[in-house]
Amino acid sequence: MTSEGIRPTGDRGRTGAGPAVNSYTEWDPLREVVVGSLLGAVFPTWQDSMKHTMPPSAWPVFRERGGSPLPERHLKAAEAELDNLAEVLEAEGVRVRRPDTARHHRPFRTPEWESGAGLYAAMPRDSLMVVGDAIVEAPMSWRCRYHESDAFRPLIKSYFRRGARWLSAPRPQLTDELYQDVGGPEPWAVSEFEPVFDAADFLRFGQDLIVQRSHVTNAFGIDWLRSALGPDFSVHVVETDDAHAMHIDATITPLAPGKLLVNPERYVHSELFGGWEILPAPSPALPADWPMYFCSPWVSMNVLSLDPETVVVERQERPLIEALTAWGFRCVEVDFRHVYSFGGSFHCVTLDTVREGASGRYLSLPES
Image (cartoon, rainbow, N blue to C red):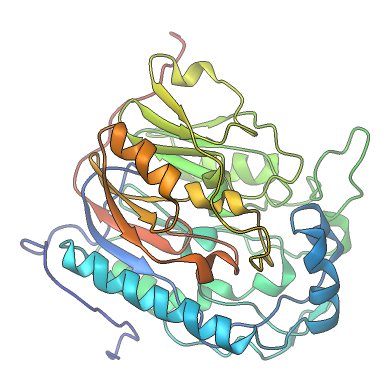
């Protein structure tokens, strides 16, 4: 580990110093990426807003085992898959960085509430977002994730010192006023008490970002990001058909300019994608008895684009691989089912810090 607390695992594919961070889309050629880690991961400390997004079978586990280590054998297999992903990306010419090891098991508190522990540093896409030359730290609404970006702080400081902008959202209080009962006129578990969002509810299309409202992202948070990014970027709210909405990247996945992979159960057509080719993702191939603590098997479509012709896909998702291959993509197949169990796949566990390319317009926007 370096003095900056980062673990670079490769340096191929880089020419010259270049910008510290530069990433405007989900598909431009990838040159540098952060891959998360499950080392020391624990079950999340339960809060009632979780029941609107988590599989009901996991509720008793979270209530009873919050703060205790995740299942050791499954966790080790998942961490090995993450390490292998880092090696695969390096072989593809991508520089890979990893977070610090953090003590997720330690309890913490504020004057208003306490959490029995943290969670993990596995999903940098949840807490961080790169927009152009800026890194944005998200104000997440799960109390156990209050310090999650700390494992990535040495990396963020390194990028800042090399010229990146660093935008940290207002520190949320996460008091009881933020959370509300779902039903009737209140479709979401978070109110408008303060700005909150998970970065994974946003997707980048050059000068435009799209976002969904969800049980972790409110309008106040969207407005804050819109203001923080300024006039060079536009943020568009899209509708999705997902009563359990939390993170848009298993509902909409842009793979290349004009090519959109969508969840056939959740996608709601938007005029923003007028003229785009839209491919409904095949049903997930995950066995029904596979342990899924955090999310649905639709994490299968949570792929990572390496460039407009290449995507990283879970090796056993054969129907998806066949569909993407027929659509003209080269699929890099990687085993990742053990990571699935803990809440994400290739897009979730990565933060693309450097992609070739500059800002542009890709969506069908109404003329002003």
